[in-house]
Image 1: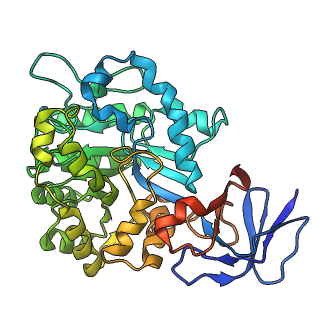
Image 2: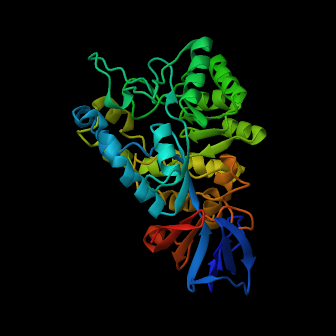
Length: 402
Protein backbone atom coordinates (compact mmCIF):
# COMPACT_ATOMS: atom_id res chain seq x y z
CA UNK A 1 0.00 0.00 0.00
CA UNK A 2 1.22 3.47 -0.89
CA UNK A 3 1.56 5.93 1.97
CA UNK A 4 0.95 9.39 0.51
CA UNK A 5 1.94 12.48 2.50
CA UNK A 6 0.73 16.00 1.72
CA UNK A 7 3.46 18.35 2.90
CA UNK A 8 4.09 22.07 3.34
CA UNK A 9 0.50 23.27 3.52
CA UNK A 10 -2.10 24.24 6.06
CA UNK A 11 -4.95 22.06 7.29
CA UNK A 12 -8.49 23.17 8.10
CA UNK A 13 -9.66 20.05 9.87
CA UNK A 14 -13.41 20.77 9.82
CA UNK A 15 -13.81 21.15 13.59
CA UNK A 16 -13.77 24.95 13.54
CA UNK A 17 -10.16 25.27 14.67
CA UNK A 18 -8.23 27.78 12.53
CA UNK A 19 -6.06 26.42 9.70
CA UNK A 20 -2.66 25.29 10.96
CA UNK A 21 0.54 24.09 9.35
CA UNK A 22 0.53 20.30 9.24
CA UNK A 23 1.23 17.32 7.03
CA UNK A 24 -1.48 14.81 6.22
CA UNK A 25 -0.92 11.13 5.41
CA UNK A 26 -3.37 8.87 3.61
CA UNK A 27 -3.12 5.15 3.02
CA UNK A 28 -5.58 2.63 1.62
CA UNK A 29 -8.30 5.28 1.31
CA UNK A 30 -8.03 6.45 4.92
CA UNK A 31 -6.34 9.28 6.79
CA UNK A 32 -3.69 7.73 9.02
CA UNK A 33 -1.79 10.73 10.44
CA UNK A 34 -2.07 14.52 10.70
CA UNK A 35 0.77 16.56 12.15
CA UNK A 36 4.22 18.04 11.57
CA UNK A 37 7.21 16.32 9.98
CA UNK A 38 5.45 13.25 8.58
CA UNK A 39 6.84 11.02 5.85
CA UNK A 40 5.52 8.66 3.20
CA UNK A 41 6.24 6.69 0.06
CA UNK A 42 4.86 9.47 -2.14
CA UNK A 43 5.04 13.16 -1.27
CA UNK A 44 2.60 15.77 -2.62
CA UNK A 45 3.83 19.34 -2.10
CA UNK A 46 0.92 21.58 -1.14
CA UNK A 47 2.94 24.62 -0.10
CA UNK A 48 0.81 27.76 -0.24
CA UNK A 49 -2.30 25.61 -0.23
CA UNK A 50 -4.86 24.62 2.38
CA UNK A 51 -6.34 21.16 2.79
CA UNK A 52 -10.06 20.99 3.57
CA UNK A 53 -12.22 17.94 4.30
CA UNK A 54 -14.38 16.87 1.39
CA UNK A 55 -17.36 19.22 1.33
CA UNK A 56 -21.07 18.34 1.57
CA UNK A 57 -24.25 19.60 -0.07
CA UNK A 58 -27.17 18.36 2.03
CA UNK A 59 -29.92 19.53 -0.33
CA UNK A 60 -29.26 19.11 -4.04
CA UNK A 61 -31.01 17.59 -7.07
CA UNK A 62 -28.34 15.88 -9.16
CA UNK A 63 -30.80 14.50 -11.73
CA UNK A 64 -32.35 17.88 -12.56
CA UNK A 65 -31.24 20.90 -14.60
CA UNK A 66 -31.66 24.64 -14.21
CA UNK A 67 -32.91 24.72 -17.81
CA UNK A 68 -35.99 22.76 -16.76
CA UNK A 69 -37.52 25.93 -15.34
CA UNK A 70 -38.78 26.11 -18.92
CA UNK A 71 -41.59 23.69 -18.12
CA UNK A 72 -43.10 23.69 -21.60
CA UNK A 73 -39.70 23.09 -23.17
CA UNK A 74 -39.02 20.21 -20.78
CA UNK A 75 -42.36 18.63 -21.68
CA UNK A 76 -41.32 18.48 -25.33
CA UNK A 77 -37.99 16.73 -24.71
CA UNK A 78 -37.73 12.95 -25.07
CA UNK A 79 -38.36 11.29 -21.70
CA UNK A 80 -34.80 9.96 -21.29
CA UNK A 81 -33.04 13.19 -22.38
CA UNK A 82 -32.43 14.33 -18.81
CA UNK A 83 -30.58 11.13 -17.93
CA UNK A 84 -27.81 12.11 -20.33
CA UNK A 85 -27.25 15.44 -18.58
CA UNK A 86 -26.63 13.93 -15.15
CA UNK A 87 -22.96 13.14 -15.72
CA UNK A 88 -22.21 16.84 -16.19
CA UNK A 89 -24.09 17.70 -12.99
CA UNK A 90 -21.96 15.15 -11.15
CA UNK A 91 -18.77 16.54 -12.66
CA UNK A 92 -19.60 20.14 -11.76
CA UNK A 93 -20.44 19.16 -8.19
CA UNK A 94 -17.33 17.07 -7.65
CA UNK A 95 -15.11 19.79 -9.14
CA UNK A 96 -16.18 22.09 -6.29
CA UNK A 97 -14.77 19.69 -3.72
CA UNK A 98 -18.24 18.38 -2.83
CA UNK A 99 -17.62 14.68 -2.32
CA UNK A 100 -20.85 13.81 -0.47
CA UNK A 101 -24.44 14.90 -1.05
CA UNK A 102 -27.95 14.28 0.22
CA UNK A 103 -30.08 14.25 -2.91
CA UNK A 104 -33.46 15.84 -2.21
CA UNK A 105 -35.42 14.07 -4.99
CA UNK A 106 -34.69 12.93 -8.50
CA UNK A 107 -31.67 10.67 -8.05
CA UNK A 108 -32.69 7.02 -8.12
CA UNK A 109 -30.93 3.89 -6.92
CA UNK A 110 -29.42 3.26 -10.35
CA UNK A 111 -27.62 6.62 -10.26
CA UNK A 112 -26.32 6.02 -6.75
CA UNK A 113 -25.03 2.56 -7.66
CA UNK A 114 -23.47 3.76 -10.91
CA UNK A 115 -21.33 6.20 -8.95
CA UNK A 116 -20.51 3.63 -6.27
CA UNK A 117 -19.49 1.09 -8.92
CA UNK A 118 -17.28 3.57 -10.78
CA UNK A 119 -19.42 3.67 -13.91
CA UNK A 120 -19.08 7.45 -13.76
CA UNK A 121 -17.38 9.79 -11.29
CA UNK A 122 -19.45 11.73 -8.81
CA UNK A 123 -20.01 12.44 -5.14
CA UNK A 124 -21.22 9.66 -2.86
CA UNK A 125 -24.86 10.19 -2.08
CA UNK A 126 -27.75 9.54 0.22
CA UNK A 127 -30.92 9.58 -1.86
CA UNK A 128 -34.57 10.30 -1.11
CA UNK A 129 -35.75 9.05 -4.53
CA UNK A 130 -38.92 11.19 -4.65
CA UNK A 131 -40.64 13.70 -2.35
CA UNK A 132 -43.82 12.76 -0.51
CA UNK A 133 -46.58 15.29 -1.15
CA UNK A 134 -50.27 15.54 -0.40
CA UNK A 135 -52.74 15.76 -3.29
CA UNK A 136 -52.48 19.31 -4.58
CA UNK A 137 -49.19 19.81 -2.74
CA UNK A 138 -45.69 20.76 -3.78
CA UNK A 139 -44.90 17.50 -5.60
CA UNK A 140 -48.27 16.95 -7.27
CA UNK A 141 -47.56 17.35 -10.99
CA UNK A 142 -51.24 17.50 -12.04
CA UNK A 143 -52.05 20.44 -14.32
CA UNK A 144 -55.47 22.03 -14.95
CA UNK A 145 -55.20 21.07 -18.61
CA UNK A 146 -55.28 17.41 -17.63
CA UNK A 147 -51.60 16.96 -18.45
CA UNK A 148 -48.88 15.94 -16.02
CA UNK A 149 -45.79 18.12 -15.80
CA UNK A 150 -42.55 16.56 -17.05
CA UNK A 151 -41.05 16.57 -13.55
CA UNK A 152 -43.91 14.42 -12.25
CA UNK A 153 -43.60 11.40 -14.54
CA UNK A 154 -43.13 8.18 -12.57
CA UNK A 155 -41.04 5.34 -13.96
CA UNK A 156 -39.58 2.06 -12.63
CA UNK A 157 -37.39 3.01 -9.69
CA UNK A 158 -39.00 6.45 -9.36
CA UNK A 159 -42.44 6.09 -7.71
CA UNK A 160 -44.94 8.93 -7.71
CA UNK A 161 -44.77 10.82 -4.42
CA UNK A 162 -48.41 11.85 -3.95
CA UNK A 163 -50.11 10.31 -0.91
CA UNK A 164 -52.85 11.13 1.62
CA UNK A 165 -54.11 9.80 4.94
CA UNK A 166 -52.38 7.63 7.51
CA UNK A 167 -52.53 4.45 5.44
CA UNK A 168 -51.50 6.32 2.29
CA UNK A 169 -48.41 8.00 3.74
CA UNK A 170 -47.31 4.79 5.47
CA UNK A 171 -47.46 2.85 2.21
CA UNK A 172 -45.59 5.60 0.37
CA UNK A 173 -42.74 5.66 2.89
CA UNK A 174 -42.37 1.92 2.44
CA UNK A 175 -42.46 2.27 -1.34
CA UNK A 176 -39.65 4.86 -1.28
CA UNK A 177 -37.54 2.64 0.96
CA UNK A 178 -38.21 -0.29 -1.38
CA UNK A 179 -36.94 1.89 -4.22
CA UNK A 180 -33.68 2.61 -2.39
CA UNK A 181 -34.33 5.76 -0.33
CA UNK A 182 -31.74 6.39 2.39
CA UNK A 183 -33.80 9.30 3.72
CA UNK A 184 -37.48 10.19 3.33
CA UNK A 185 -38.25 13.66 2.00
CA UNK A 186 -41.63 15.28 2.53
CA UNK A 187 -43.27 18.58 1.63
CA UNK A 188 -44.71 19.86 4.90
CA UNK A 189 -45.59 23.16 3.23
CA UNK A 190 -46.35 24.32 -0.25
CA UNK A 191 -43.54 25.45 -2.56
CA UNK A 192 -42.61 28.32 -4.83
CA UNK A 193 -41.83 26.42 -8.04
CA UNK A 194 -45.02 24.33 -8.11
CA UNK A 195 -47.96 26.12 -9.72
CA UNK A 196 -51.01 25.26 -7.60
CA UNK A 197 -50.01 25.43 -3.92
CA UNK A 198 -49.20 28.17 -1.40
CA UNK A 199 -45.72 28.06 0.18
CA UNK A 200 -46.95 29.82 3.31
CA UNK A 201 -49.53 27.10 4.08
CA UNK A 202 -48.92 23.66 5.59
CA UNK A 203 -49.11 20.45 3.58
CA UNK A 204 -50.07 17.21 5.37
CA UNK A 205 -51.90 17.19 8.68
CA UNK A 206 -49.97 16.86 11.93
CA UNK A 207 -51.11 13.25 12.16
CA UNK A 208 -49.84 12.49 8.65
CA UNK A 209 -46.42 14.04 9.34
CA UNK A 210 -46.20 12.15 12.64
CA UNK A 211 -46.97 8.90 10.83
CA UNK A 212 -44.42 9.56 8.08
CA UNK A 213 -41.68 10.02 10.69
CA UNK A 214 -42.83 6.94 12.63
CA UNK A 215 -42.99 4.74 9.51
CA UNK A 216 -39.58 5.97 8.38
CA UNK A 217 -38.05 5.34 11.83
CA UNK A 218 -39.37 1.77 11.80
CA UNK A 219 -37.28 1.24 8.67
CA UNK A 220 -34.19 3.02 10.00
CA UNK A 221 -34.68 6.22 7.99
CA UNK A 222 -34.71 9.90 8.96
CA UNK A 223 -37.04 12.46 7.40
CA UNK A 224 -36.06 15.74 5.75
CA UNK A 225 -38.84 18.30 5.40
CA UNK A 226 -39.22 20.83 2.63
CA UNK A 227 -40.88 23.61 4.64
CA UNK A 228 -41.31 27.33 3.88
CA UNK A 229 -44.30 28.46 5.96
CA UNK A 230 -44.22 28.73 9.75
CA UNK A 231 -46.97 26.18 10.46
CA UNK A 232 -45.51 23.63 8.04
CA UNK A 233 -42.16 24.09 9.80
CA UNK A 234 -43.72 23.64 13.24
CA UNK A 235 -45.61 20.48 12.25
CA UNK A 236 -42.40 18.94 10.95
CA UNK A 237 -40.47 19.85 14.11
CA UNK A 238 -43.20 18.44 16.37
CA UNK A 239 -43.00 15.18 14.43
CA UNK A 240 -39.21 15.00 15.01
CA UNK A 241 -37.99 15.30 11.44
CA UNK A 242 -34.22 15.30 11.10
CA UNK A 243 -34.02 18.60 9.23
CA UNK A 244 -36.03 21.58 8.10
CA UNK A 245 -34.99 22.43 4.55
CA UNK A 246 -35.48 25.98 3.18
CA UNK A 247 -37.15 27.37 6.33
CA UNK A 248 -37.96 30.58 4.46
CA UNK A 249 -40.44 31.95 7.00
CA UNK A 250 -38.85 30.46 10.09
CA UNK A 251 -39.91 32.40 13.18
CA UNK A 252 -38.55 32.65 16.72
CA UNK A 253 -41.07 30.13 18.08
CA UNK A 254 -40.01 27.51 15.53
CA UNK A 255 -36.31 28.27 16.09
CA UNK A 256 -36.82 27.69 19.82
CA UNK A 257 -38.54 24.38 19.05
CA UNK A 258 -35.60 23.37 16.85
CA UNK A 259 -33.15 24.14 19.63
CA UNK A 260 -35.20 22.13 22.09
CA UNK A 261 -35.45 19.07 19.83
CA UNK A 262 -32.05 19.28 18.13
CA UNK A 263 -33.59 19.73 14.67
CA UNK A 264 -31.17 20.67 11.89
CA UNK A 265 -31.67 23.59 9.49
CA UNK A 266 -30.65 23.43 5.81
CA UNK A 267 -31.59 26.87 4.50
CA UNK A 268 -30.58 26.70 0.79
CA UNK A 269 -29.82 30.44 0.62
CA UNK A 270 -28.32 30.07 -2.85
CA UNK A 271 -31.72 29.25 -4.33
CA UNK A 272 -32.90 32.78 -3.51
CA UNK A 273 -30.36 34.24 -5.93
CA UNK A 274 -32.70 33.37 -8.81
CA UNK A 275 -35.95 34.74 -7.35
CA UNK A 276 -36.02 37.95 -9.39
CA UNK A 277 -34.67 36.26 -12.51
CA UNK A 278 -37.41 33.64 -12.53
CA UNK A 279 -40.12 36.15 -11.66
CA UNK A 280 -39.27 37.96 -14.90
CA UNK A 281 -38.61 34.91 -17.10
CA UNK A 282 -41.48 34.23 -19.55
CA UNK A 283 -40.43 30.58 -19.76
CA UNK A 284 -41.48 30.10 -16.13
CA UNK A 285 -45.20 29.30 -15.68
CA UNK A 286 -47.17 32.40 -14.70
CA UNK A 287 -48.54 30.94 -11.43
CA UNK A 288 -44.95 30.39 -10.29
CA UNK A 289 -43.84 33.85 -11.39
CA UNK A 290 -46.69 35.39 -9.43
CA UNK A 291 -45.47 33.73 -6.23
CA UNK A 292 -41.95 35.02 -6.75
CA UNK A 293 -42.81 38.65 -7.52
CA UNK A 294 -41.89 40.88 -4.61
CA UNK A 295 -40.74 37.95 -2.48
CA UNK A 296 -37.34 39.47 -1.74
CA UNK A 297 -34.92 37.45 0.40
CA UNK A 298 -36.80 36.44 3.59
CA UNK A 299 -34.55 33.39 3.89
CA UNK A 300 -31.61 35.66 4.70
CA UNK A 301 -33.53 37.13 7.63
CA UNK A 302 -34.44 33.61 8.74
CA UNK A 303 -30.81 32.54 8.62
CA UNK A 304 -29.61 35.52 10.63
CA UNK A 305 -32.21 34.78 13.27
CA UNK A 306 -31.38 31.06 13.35
CA UNK A 307 -27.64 31.71 13.48
CA UNK A 308 -28.09 34.11 16.38
CA UNK A 309 -30.24 31.59 18.22
CA UNK A 310 -27.70 28.79 17.83
CA UNK A 311 -29.79 26.46 15.66
CA UNK A 312 -27.72 23.61 14.15
CA UNK A 313 -27.01 24.35 10.49
CA UNK A 314 -25.73 22.18 7.64
CA UNK A 315 -25.02 23.40 4.12
CA UNK A 316 -27.46 22.77 1.29
CA UNK A 317 -28.08 24.70 -1.91
CA UNK A 318 -31.14 23.38 -3.80
CA UNK A 319 -29.11 23.40 -7.00
CA UNK A 320 -30.19 23.44 -9.82
CA UNK A 321 -32.62 26.19 -8.78
CA UNK A 322 -29.37 28.03 -9.31
CA UNK A 323 -27.26 26.07 -11.80
CA UNK A 324 -25.09 23.17 -10.74
CA UNK A 325 -21.57 24.47 -10.18
CA UNK A 326 -22.68 27.50 -8.15
CA UNK A 327 -22.99 25.53 -4.88
CA UNK A 328 -20.14 27.27 -3.03
CA UNK A 329 -22.06 30.53 -3.19
CA UNK A 330 -23.87 29.11 -0.14
CA UNK A 331 -20.71 29.54 1.94
CA UNK A 332 -20.48 33.21 0.97
CA UNK A 333 -24.14 33.86 1.82
CA UNK A 334 -23.83 32.17 5.20
CA UNK A 335 -20.70 34.19 5.99
CA UNK A 336 -22.44 37.44 5.01
CA UNK A 337 -25.57 36.79 7.05
CA UNK A 338 -24.69 35.68 10.55
CA UNK A 339 -21.96 33.06 10.40
CA UNK A 340 -18.23 33.55 10.55
CA UNK A 341 -16.33 32.07 7.59
CA UNK A 342 -15.15 29.25 9.85
CA UNK A 343 -18.72 28.46 10.92
CA UNK A 344 -19.77 28.35 7.26
CA UNK A 345 -17.07 25.79 6.42
CA UNK A 346 -18.01 23.73 9.47
CA UNK A 347 -21.60 23.71 8.18
CA UNK A 348 -20.27 22.25 4.93
CA UNK A 349 -18.03 19.65 6.61
CA UNK A 350 -18.36 18.24 10.13
CA UNK A 351 -21.88 19.57 10.77
CA UNK A 352 -23.13 18.22 7.45
CA UNK A 353 -21.54 14.85 8.19
CA UNK A 354 -23.33 14.77 11.55
CA UNK A 355 -26.68 15.63 9.96
CA UNK A 356 -26.27 12.73 7.55
CA UNK A 357 -25.06 10.32 10.25
CA UNK A 358 -21.62 10.08 8.66
CA UNK A 359 -19.57 11.78 11.38
CA UNK A 360 -17.57 8.62 12.11
CA UNK A 361 -16.43 8.40 8.50
CA UNK A 362 -16.33 11.88 7.01
CA UNK A 363 -16.44 15.61 7.72
CA UNK A 364 -13.06 16.13 9.39
CA UNK A 365 -9.42 15.51 8.55
CA UNK A 366 -8.38 13.18 11.33
CA UNK A 367 -6.92 9.67 11.59
CA UNK A 368 -9.36 6.90 10.81
CA UNK A 369 -11.64 8.96 8.56
CA UNK A 370 -12.13 8.29 4.87
CA UNK A 371 -9.60 10.25 2.86
CA UNK A 372 -11.78 12.92 1.28
CA UNK A 373 -9.72 16.09 0.92
CA UNK A 374 -9.76 19.28 -1.12
CA UNK A 375 -6.61 21.20 -2.07
CA UNK A 376 -7.26 24.94 -2.20
CA UNK A 377 -4.81 27.60 -3.37
CA UNK A 378 -4.71 30.54 -0.98
CA UNK A 379 -7.22 31.53 1.68
CA UNK A 380 -10.06 28.97 2.06
CA UNK A 381 -12.25 31.66 3.65
CA UNK A 382 -12.30 33.88 0.54
CA UNK A 383 -15.52 32.24 -0.57
CA UNK A 384 -16.22 34.53 -3.51
CA UNK A 385 -13.32 33.02 -5.46
CA UNK A 386 -13.07 29.64 -3.74
CA UNK A 387 -14.47 27.64 -6.66
CA UNK A 388 -11.78 29.06 -8.97
CA UNK A 389 -8.97 28.06 -6.59
CA UNK A 390 -9.72 24.38 -6.04
CA UNK A 391 -6.69 22.57 -7.42
CA UNK A 392 -7.42 18.94 -6.60
CA UNK A 393 -10.14 16.82 -5.02
CA UNK A 394 -9.58 13.42 -3.38
CA UNK A 395 -12.34 10.93 -2.60
CA UNK A 396 -11.42 7.84 -0.59
CA UNK A 397 -7.78 8.69 -1.25
CA UNK A 398 -8.14 8.75 -5.05
CA UNK A 399 -7.65 11.95 -6.97
CA UNK A 400 -10.95 12.53 -8.75
CA UNK A 401 -10.47 16.16 -9.90
CA UNK A 402 -7.24 17.64 -11.27
